[in-house]
Image 1: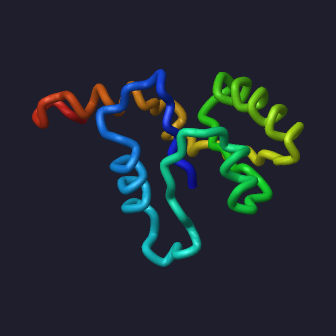
Image 2: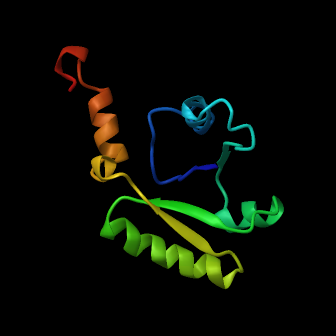
Length: 110
C-alpha cells in the first residue's frame, strides 16, 4: 500500500507517520501487506517492486473521473487499475473534513 507524498499538499503529519497510522489500522494478520510512503510515480514503484496491478479507492463520480485519467496513463505503461468503491457511509469523507474534525475541541467532535 502506497501512502502518496504530494508536494502541493501540507498534511498535519509527515509521510512516515501517515504510513505508520495506516499500518496500525490494518489487521495484524495481514502480514503480506506492506505500507510505504512514496513520493515518485506509482508506476515507478510498481515496476521496481514487481507489482502487476494498481488498486485505487473511489468515493464518488468526481473521484472516478480523476482516477480514470490516472488509470489510462498507468495502463499505457502496462499497469492495469482496479477501482474499489468506498462504503456508502464513507463516500463523503475527505482529508479536508478529517483535518477539520481533528482541530475541533473534544467536546464538539461528533
